[in-house]
Length: 394
Length: 138
Image (cartoon, helix red, strand yellow):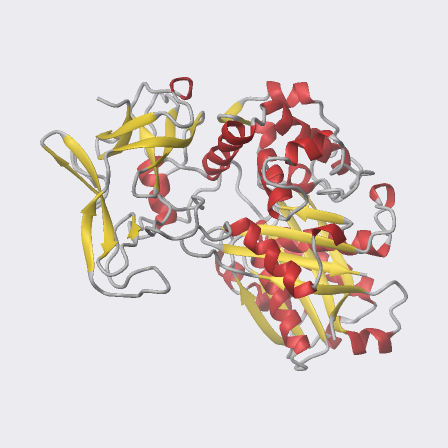
């Protein structure tokens, strides 16, 4: 038995300045229409929370349900940083797999401030996320830059390699009407953009965006009875693993890694996220037709390509240069345009990744369509050790 | 508010005879080590012992990676005005930890490379509170 993605919906990403509920509702209504389901039929609604939009953001499942009109449906709300959308999907999927319901709606949406993400307000000297700003001025891009510089030192990657990721993703994003940035860019433009956190420049780092994404999940039994006209897109795996101890990589928002004398270093966190998904799906990297990975920075996309097993460590730039990860390549990475073209709308982003998988697997991705896709993986990493990877198949 | 010259955070580092030491927690049962210090139980999931001790970390390590902040970080960071980019270094210590910190003012990314040796010191943030900082070996 598996869970089917019956309908998908998204509000275009941008900097629209409207309440997050607007984006979530637009996405939800589109997902319901796409599924051919009326809202009152939904038995379970799950909201992926936003922490920068007041109380409704913390109880987003109920906020969305109220805005759609109370129906007495069961509800859940969850927050898992960047993995919130994946976690919301996981909760709905699990309830369907448990036989407790047949039809669920998952919604995530965000309205974001301009500029760097700052910690939530107030003085909280016990909160590492507050302290890393207070003591070090260590923003999210600072951590991305540490990883990027490390790639340069260990693997010989160059800023030109990082720029090539942006060029690739902008080319895909230009073909996606839901993306915020839809203009192709050149490597020269990326390399001339202002330095933000050396070696990463403005165009290497993803923006913060407004957006919303939703999907209707159904039991296979329901989907068949419902007569879904398209190939059934199935969720084959959802991995929501934590890191293993002692994680050798400095994670956000940590000040240090752990040390255990004599310990064999475990699989690093990002790689373990994908591995758990492969094991659950009974698939491997070679089975993927496409992947959506969390390219918070250009360099991080290269890390992800290795972490999800598309190539050995250190060879992602080679893969990129060969065109393997571009549209038309062996295994396109971020065919949606990725965060490079969308910017990050935190609780919506993991759902948007799965929307792209579903669109591609249905053969409905228009000019971005990948030829005969069979399986796709969406991976991301949330602050404080919330990983997620989802595999969808057709 | 923190007063000038006082540590910006309590119990994370100590300055003694002009030398700055990071304070970590060590498990006396399995040797696990973590920073910043935190009591209770060992964080090694296969240990969980309660016999913990405060320990000083090595003052020298090698640069694991580094970057800077070309734009002033948002509050609660107190940025200097006018702002000069701050530099951050993640430093691998002989004990096996990598510890993040600012570098001393004046040390830029052009002065750093992965693998070079640095030494712990401390210095003031823009509001006068002190933090640990990485600098060249003395």
